[in-house]
Length: 211
Image (cartoon, rainbow, N blue to C red; front, side):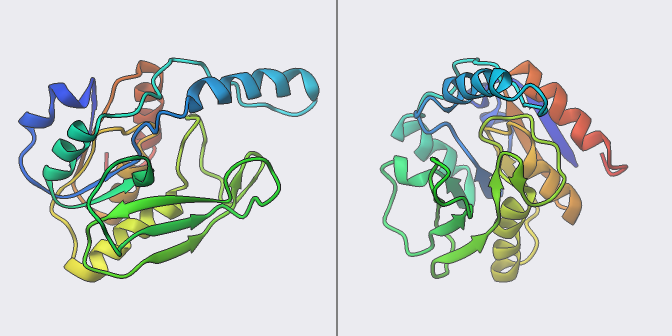
C-alpha cells in the first residue's frame, strides 16, 4: 500500500494507526520556498539556453513547533527527521549526515537528520546541486531529497529492525519517502498540502506498477 493524501498532516494523523517508522523532511523555517523561487527566477534570465527549474513560492516553509514535532515523532516506534538540528529534540547518537558534495557552491555542504534508532552516527555522500547531481530522478520540489539518501535511511532501519510494516511521512513533498518504500515493497502513507506537489508526486508514483 502506497497512499498519498492531499491535505495537512494534522487532519489525518489520528486516522493512521501506529507506524514502525516516521521518515520525513519537515519545513525548517528557513524560507527555502521563497529563496528557491527567487534563485530560479534570476537564473532564468542569466542563462536562457539552459533549462531552468522554476519554483513557485507557496510560503509553506514555516518551522513546525516543537510540540507538533513531538506529536509526529510519537506516532512511530522509530523516527528519522531531516533538519532535526532545527528542533529541540532528545539527545541522540544516531544522527545521519548527508554530504552533498557541493563545497563552494553557496549552499550547505551537509544536511543532518535526527534519529532515535539504536545505532551510531551514519554518513552518506550523494551529489545534489542543481545540474550537478547523481541519478536521473525528476526534481520538482525546492527541498527535495535524493532517492538514494531516503533509501539509505530506510535501509539503516531494515538492517537494524527488519522491514517496517508501515512508514509515515507527514511532509511528503515530492513523495521520495513513498517512492523509496514502493521500491522496497514497504507500505507507506504520506500527506502533502500543496496541490501542485501532490499531483506531480502521484504521477511519479504511478510510473511504477506497484501503485
